Amino acid sequence: MKPQLLKVPKAPSYSFNARRDRIPNINNNWHYHAELELIHFHKGQGMQFVGDNMKNFGPGDIVLIGSNLPHFWKYDEINEKPGKEEPAAAYSTVIHFTENFWGDCFLNLPETATIKSIIKKAQRGIIAHEKEVPNLAAELDKIYSTEGVERIIALLRCLSEFADNSNKTKLLSSLGFKYEFNTAANDRINAVYDFTLKNFKNTILLEKVSSIANMALNSFCRYFKTKTGKSYMQFLNELRIGYACKLLIDNRYSIKQICFESGFKNFTSFHKIFKKNKGKTPQQYFKEYLNKV
Image 1 (cartoon, helix red, strand yellow):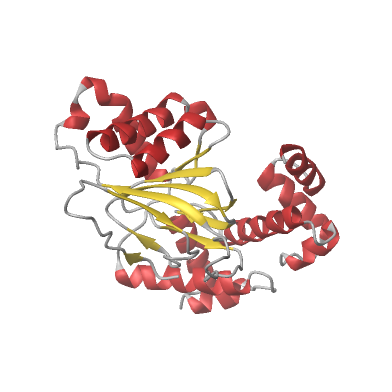
Image 2 (tube, rainbow, N blue to C red):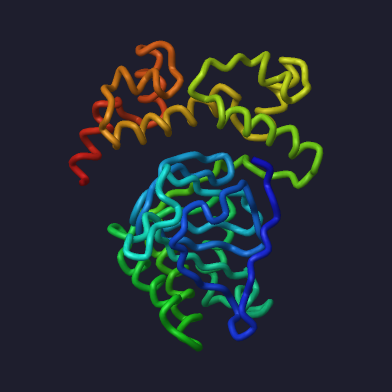
């Protein structure tokens, strides 16, 4: 999961990029780019990684990602190349724009203070849902479907909707998260991330992870906490709980089976950690999901 600088293409006739993706995992790597990213998921679900935040995503989610904030979306296993008559299993609208594409002075105007504030908050990633902020989804659709100055106006309205509905949005990455673009340091932390993503369902010993980072155990624990703002075990538990939430929604296993499928070896510990992370028990989480559906 090595973060890569992604070069976002832009047509010469447009000041920012808007597209529709119908192929899942089109940028299936831990990446960042200078442009802010605004994405609306219409169809498909999976695991979302934004900075040091991990959570499930699904249809209706709208996410604003700040400049140079590492991220990627890992869709659940689906047919990535549907036939001609087969509907796309993943479908999203994606907007990329630079902070100053409208000029260096625009965001310093008193009238655009709220827009400037939202762009700053986007450094941590912001998530909303189309059901709670329907105007945001409508304006985002206009960005893709309109031309000329209407595209820019629709983008401004999208950012304004984020500002006006801050009580209906959530920040994703932690306040202390700051990605350091240092190749040697990146290789170390990325090796840890990659190993954890591949093995979180199994027993993971801190000694093994620290050896992957080529560090003594105590030094690794301090290093990881400094880099991510959380302990390695917190990171591992968040990943496991996120996967457990997916299995709960799929409703194919009992809660006790989900405990072990997610990498936990003790049901009492799973129950306690789940409630600490989600503010509710696995049973309450599943019932709340059913009520929403």
